[in-house]
Image 1: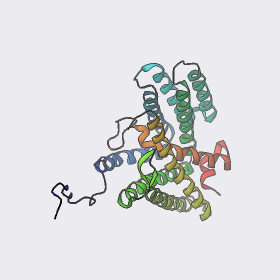
Image 2 (image 1 turned 120 degrees about the vertical axis):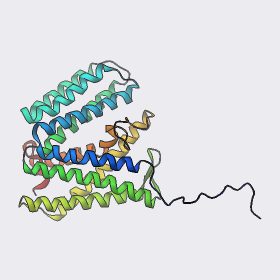
Image 3 (image 1 turned 30 degrees about the horizontal axis):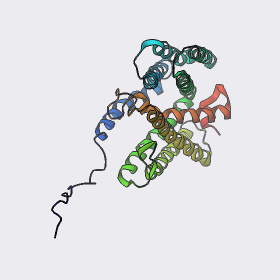
Image 4 (image 1 turned 120 degrees about the horizontal axis):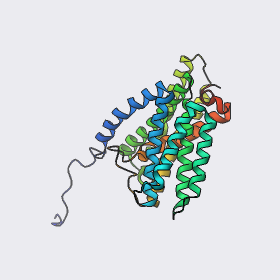
Length: 291
């Protein structure tokens, strides 16, 4: 005999594992991806302006998150300094950007406030990432391919993690930090990101007639893909620390700028370090691709 109090079973449950954010995500991607690719290919000042706008906007979200208020001081001046770090790079070189970066950190260190250490940490991170993006792009053809490599690994890592995680599910990756992420999603993201990186790796070697070893491309793709997922988790941990669900609402389906570039920023930082240690300040794209 059936229990009269039993709840009726929901029909169609599990047939659509994706949430209502899938369509907004796709629409946002259709707009943002072509725009980013064009800026990457054009390079020089247009690319610097894009990075300046995005990183200054990301810092704005950081400042609001750590303080809980939308105050122009000291947010706007620091945003301006971050933008100057990007714009100075193609005009006057890496050392000019580094000088502005150091000055911005000095300014932030003397601004009083209860969360001053978080302000300095945010400025340090976004300023460093700004320099990383500019160095990876550089001014050569190799910079375009290095940028495409970074974007391909990061975007396919995010895409693979999203779809595999939603379809397969399973054990949570870090339930205390990000309850929606699973080990299956992490594995799917790693596989997709690594494959995308290898495809770009071979295409870059063929296009520039400078083929590099498969194992190096595989290793860098894996490292960058893991870094992308670490960036996502790191931002989730910071948002949980300040009890914030989304860093903002500027991008439908993604939240704020920080929510959209969390994976990309950490991946860029790691890729920059690889190129920097291999070939030095003046040849970061070549240090990434030429082995």
